[in-house]
Amino acid sequence: MSLSRMRIVISLLAGLCLTYVCPVSHSQENYFVTYSHQMEEPGNLELATRSVSGFPHGGNSFVGSVLELEYGVRAWWTSELYLDGQSTANESTLFTGYRLENRFRPLLREHWINPVLYFEFENINSADKSLLEVVGHDGRADFLSRNDRSEKKREVEFKLILSSNFKGWNLSENIIAEKNLKAEPWEFGYAIGISRPLSLVASPNPCRVCAENFSLGAELYGGLGDRYSFGLHDTSHYLAPIVNLRLPNGPAFKVSPGFGLNSNSHGMLLRFGVSYEIDQIMSKLRRK
Amino acid sequence: MKNGRLLIAAFGLILVPLLLAGTGDGAWMTKVPEKDRQKQSPFDADPRAIAAGAKLFRQNCASCHGDEALGREKRPNLHSDRIRNATAGELQWLLTNGSLKNGMPSWSRLPEPQRWQIVTYLKSLQ
Image 1 (cartoon, rainbow over the protein chains, first blue to last red):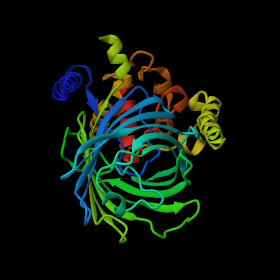
Image 2: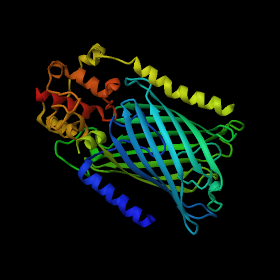
Image 3: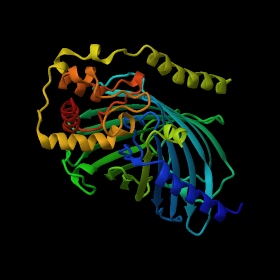
Image 4: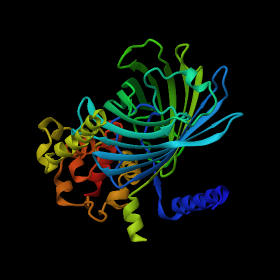
């Protein structure tokens, strides 16, 4: 099957699914890089795309994209599959690999600080530009060479997610450790996010573009070096405000311009995401 | 050898929460702290809060509990004696904490006033 025919079939299937099988509800992720302790509701499937555009000085502009399928296995266990790709101006458009991710909530009640354990396996190549996190000495220089898929990266990544909800605010902190299984050192990173809905009280009337459906926030993320050179030296860091709009029983949109905080960082990264949450997908498929 | 250790660590990280989850709470009502049980809804029976709660219920809860809160598949009917007899504070506690072991997620991502609006709606059903 040719690529264009495959795209048409996939689009039709997605359209049918979204129209007839899967009424959508809103998704809940507030951030692009930072994770909160919010898990996917059990039985729900979230389909999302996230893209990041970068404009490195001395290199070609790029758009890195991921297609994300997130499923709530249990109320305390969320599983995800990511398919990564990228397109670089004057170069090429590439599929760059996949990631499998699992998140577990070890404590079953709400606390001041709620920990979540995160485990991910990545099978990507060196052309990947999805920038789902920044670790080690990742920086602008990595994006200056031409697309090169020759290096396979099989990596494991662990995160300790700490997250709190207080008076409508969410504050989340992630500590990241990543290791290429090919005898490279552990790399470290961090992400911190804060967000709040524009209105804490829902209006009695149905509304789509109203304050209760918007949330504003910001995230700060960057690398912390590796096992042999831990710290801020030769690392990159970003500060990124975020605007979220969740349409009731519809898609959620988020946009975030990220600003590089030092000379190793990209000057600006522009992120955009759309997500649909399909309620109780297995039950719906069983009923059909 | 190094990869072997890494795999063991990864399995450990997956298994520990599974084991911890297996020892989770049982009947949620018995777990509600007294101070939470006594909490009063700031909306009482305000009809605007009931309407807002109904809207939030349809957006967030109806996929499991049904549009009329009568339950769906194995998900509970909320017109039950347990919900009827529960205090507003107990329902608020359940929405905040969930009952993760039994499949009820935590709704702490909704701001507290919105959770109270849902509770107000649930109490209006009885």
